[in-house]
Length: 204
Image 1 (cartoon, rainbow, N blue to C red):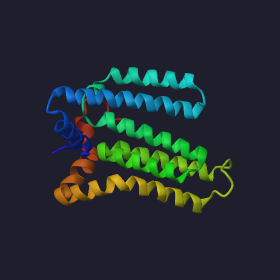
Image 2: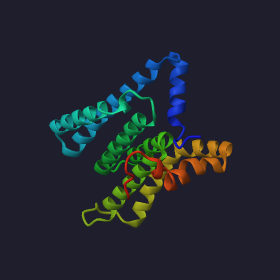
Image 3: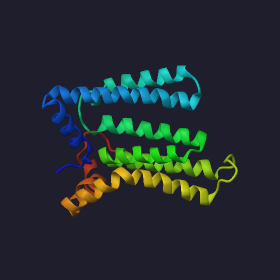
Image 4: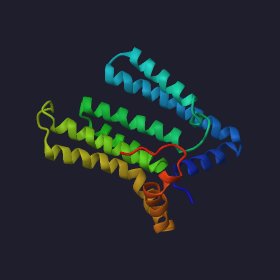
């Protein structure tokens, strides 16, 4: 029984298969993923501001925040998920600037991979990027030629990218676990888990 998506378990199993079943394997992997996420955080800030100094500041804050949590040494779902979320956001910013559908599709792939590691965080990322697409297409400052049809097309491209890694995994485990998967991954976290959490469960 687990309320986590399967990505981190199989990723750790793969690392054990390659490097051996040593506790340092997971610790080093988590540290490398957090360091990589700090690098992507730097690129994201630079892409948003056009300057390196904010990127260095953001990456430094992110790295310090990661080191103050157990995530940087624990091979759980969060290090990979955070890296994938930042990659998705970075690709989305590139898409907004360039209009490249390939980058939007790649942002979808990164989001779908995040769903495989942490389905709720990946889902929130998908909603955030969909909201960003909506804003970029429908606000008064939108580029010429934008509108509802263009928005639907872009949402479709993004969703297709997200489905590429996430859908086969969801179908495979749904066939294996059946209703238990829905109960463990969706129903329990949404209805019961907040009663057992040590910290206060915030509302939406």
